Amino acid sequence: MSTEAEERMAIRIDGREVAEQILANVASRVDSRRRRGLPPPHLAVVLVGHDQASETYVRGKRRDAERVGIASSDHRLPETATTAEVVELVARLNHDPEVSGVLVQQPLPLQVEVAAVVEAVDPAKDVDGFHPLNAGRLLLGQPGILPCTPAGILRMLDHYGVVLEGRRAVVLGRSNIVGKPTAVLLLRRHATVTVCHTRTRGLAEVCREAEILVAAAGRRHLVRPDWIRPGAAVIDVGVNRGPDGRLSGDVDPEAARVAGWLSPVPGGVGPVTRAMLMANTLQAEEERRP
Ligand code: NAD
Figure (tube, rainbow, N blue to C red):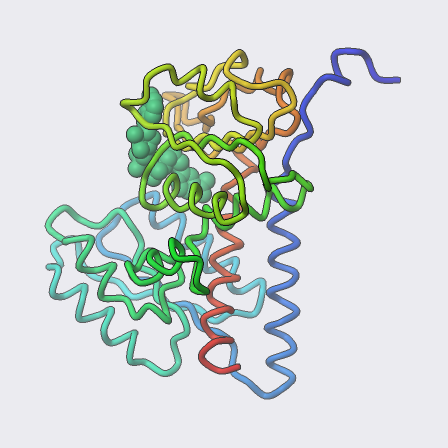
């Protein structure tokens, strides 16, 4: 028999479970294409320099791809590469008929102009969904490739049957890769959305209004339990590495005593984001060769 305290705990939004479902679906669609005699989708990853974290991410992407039958290739440039050199490599991959999706791993070395590189990627192969054309399509509600983390957040909420329509949603963070696109996706699903940032006044009160709260500030345990509206669905996007190397989110885990649903860190948004990259690579290939 469960105790009263346990009964009050939030439902844990299990990112690994959601990711498994996405990957299983991708694997079965890739397999049915194979049976129709079509080549596998191919993800090309561009890596500039030797960032340790990037190396780990890229290895993870390669493993995910292998698991679902997607081919992948790494394309490396030295730490000293110029913007023109990165753009030239991207252009070559854009024109390569074998390649379905091109991902440029960030961060890029300081001398490389990020916007120029992002714009160099063919929007049809932009599996990160960062190209201005795809960002514009997202804003206009047109079909296109969605950025992995925001799309993953919506998948998590849907998987757990969280109703969005007509609900008050608060997104904490306004970055181009997480906060803004997540706010737009929630708006597209008819939530009433507030976006908060470093200059927001009365942050705690605004968060307390949220029936859906997405925390993407990158500040360890910024969101306290008393910022949470009882029963709210809380998605913790933050990944903060402590001095001991351990990862923690933007939401104090004690928030589970107040929230209705809460995604953990690690094991929440991270695995779903990775799975969405595979889904996007397949989507790009399906649109190229139906
Ligand atoms: P970012 O630094 O570009 O943006 C952070 C945003 O939060 C900014 O808009 C800023 O205004 C706001 N913010 C920061 N501190 C705040 C404060 N004290 N009060 C109010 N607003 C504040 O970061 P990002 O790229 O959007 O990523 C956010 C977090 O999500 C990071 O921890 C990042 O590591 C994590 N992340 C995780 C995944 C994943 O797959 N799990 C993917 C992307 C990002």
